[in-house]
Image (cartoon, rainbow, N blue to C red; front, side, top):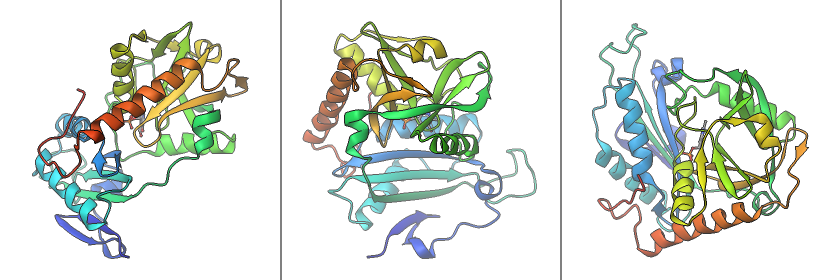
Length: 305
Ligand code: PLP
């Protein structure tokens, strides 16, 4: 069966899909993307993902000729065409600035290009959730704060894949970025949380991190369920002495961590609080699905924001 992707306003067979070689996404990584998933046709947190995307498109001055409803409609059609209406799907929404005109700045009269990919989702190994994963710190050190870029999900993802490769080399599943003064920022493709004496901690958005959608859901879940959660600077020594550590992302959800670098989490993995949050997260997803809110209810997406 053919796979279809949405490119330049049309659904085309993936093997025949084309993006111009002069597209600035290809030439310079000048574009943004969102990765999200659906659960049995329900596109989880789509509004929040689109909000983050449109915020970045505005701030970084993409001259967008379409609105959120256009993307929702294109996504619905992509899911439909790939027969993913009732399945778990991996979804990628990509916007590039368009074909390069010769000017490196943003005002070259660019016309953005939209690409949507939807494919069946390959779940992460069950053992990741039941026994935890290893994470490792990247050799890359980010500035403490002040970069105008890390809060956007830029197509230029080289720093992240470089760090992922370092993790892979060290037999870990995720890499974590630190500052030069050893503050923990975020994972290469996730946000980081830890638990100490029943309080959940995560680095604040004022540092150079992506405002993760799953991070936001987890913070809300904690607040709604009487779990104390604090957004504060996290030092490397805090995390290596944590009772529990977990990472969050849209595709993987909440994944417990059993080891960071050479430091093994001393308590049981997943820890009690992590397990509770994983369960509450699962309930949240099920609740939304049970209300019948899928990508087909075009104008009825839910958002926690
Ligand atoms: N931080 C970075 C750098 C990421 O690339 C991602 C996701 O890919 C996340 C955090 C998690 O964000 P979300 O929960 O929105 O998937």
